[in-house]
Amino acid sequence: MKIGVHPNNLHLRLARLWPGAFEEFDPEFVAYREGRDTAALLEKGEIHFGGTGSTPPIEADARGLSAVYIAASAPRPANGAILVRRDSSICSAADLAAKRISLIDGSFHTYLLARSLEGAGLGLADVTRIESGDSDSLRDLVEGRVDAWVTMSPRLEKALTHEEISLLVRCGSTIPNRSLFWTLSRHNIGGETGQAIATELDRVGRAVMADIDKAAALLAAEPGSEGDAQSWAKVLRSRDLSVVAAAENILAEQQEEADTLYRHGHFSLPVLTGQSASVGGGR
Image 1 (cartoon, one colour):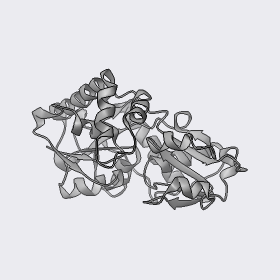
Image 2 (cartoon, rainbow, N blue to C red; image 1 turned 90 degrees about the horizontal axis):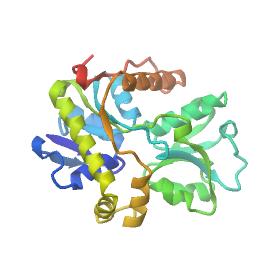
Image 3 (spheres, rainbow, N blue to C red; image 1 turned 90 degrees about the vertical axis):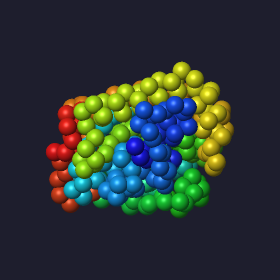
């Protein structure tokens, strides 16, 4: 089985490093750049499933690709946030009107921003979204090229130690922010296979939580790692890495997000979200 792994999905990064993970699936861990590439890789058959935030599978459904949800993490309340400069006049989401917001657009960042704005009577059209891409977004914020920055772990923890940065919105107060493990209906992952994947994801997650120092050392030893073992241990201790098979509550959350993004004009048409692999692939 070809399992997609990108830097921002910590669970699958750890699975690739953890001894014996997914061994019954004869795994090939396929590295790629970012979560927004997941649908294209699934469409081409280069991976069989991957893990992302909540938004990429909805983007896939908007393209008619029939996303199928395999499993979901627990909510990740500490994993994302909107940051501003400490000396900024922005004190609430209402103050984001007409401001420049750096984010990975089409990721859960877009949903976090939309819900935050909506709570203040605003919409995505009321701000300027700036794709963060490969730029140094922390520097862009500190030096005033953007007014706010939507970010996630492990960059978030590092940014919060900066003396010129202030927390505006934490995602736990706004959206569930789960990690979703998903595929496309064309790969026919459902029933026992889907349940087995969910079970193995949960097993790996619980093994990591039982030995955080080992997991942190593995992440710190990766080429280009974003932190040392101590900083990775802090990130891991902030998370519940348990995983459950995707069920109706997960689908309901995804549909709520799809409806919200349509309401904000992110999608031109309503999007019907995918099915759970545990009840059969497709629509």
